[in-house]
Image (cartoon, rainbow, N blue to C red):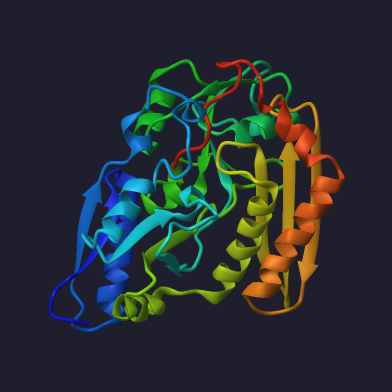
Length: 322
């Protein structure tokens, strides 16, 4: 590495800074002499927290400004939550490294310590995600799912101070912030299937920056890369993003990668699922697995369920945000 610092651009939220700080520490520990500097920036999604994300429009609401910092060479690399990163990478940039994944599950934090199926009838549950809301309604049609945006601290405060019985958030964020002891229950994949890429980080860089790409390679975890590649291929084939009720989770099962995916009608009244396995290695095999499972969902009518997102404004909870 050169004597000048490697600059990592990141969102300004406490969780994003925690994640970027972890990447900084890993690089400096694994590359003696490497100095890393953080460049925190605000994003469109961070600034417009009073409106549902579909109303803002466009992709990359939490990544666009970070990618611009790469393209104009203010930074060498960007640290994202992988679930925020569109499946089509911006021109001139590459997904340089995917570190080992944290817990991909969703977690329930309950004000009174009740587990999901023990919450009282009509319980009010806060979530920022159409995907979570649809699956919660599928399992408990009686619950009231209410919009909840903000960073982790804000969501936990609203749970403590407000009328909500519980909130559902990503377990990985709670772990990274050191708040795992506040989790009431880890939700099984059969209850709430995770978002594509949930629990994983994405380190993005310029495709022509060979020195930075070589440095970032020390962060790569091949098992995680294969799993998220399968998930993202499925999402890309279905034409979705974090604003639709598509969920997918891939994991290593012996010598194979197993991929499970669901598409749910937003009101929870209908759900289709598919799964597949692949024993082949490599990114092409992972992409093929994702496409195969996506085709299964399409044959079962996935597009019909996704078209139901034309519900009136305000009838659905806000889409996912980290």
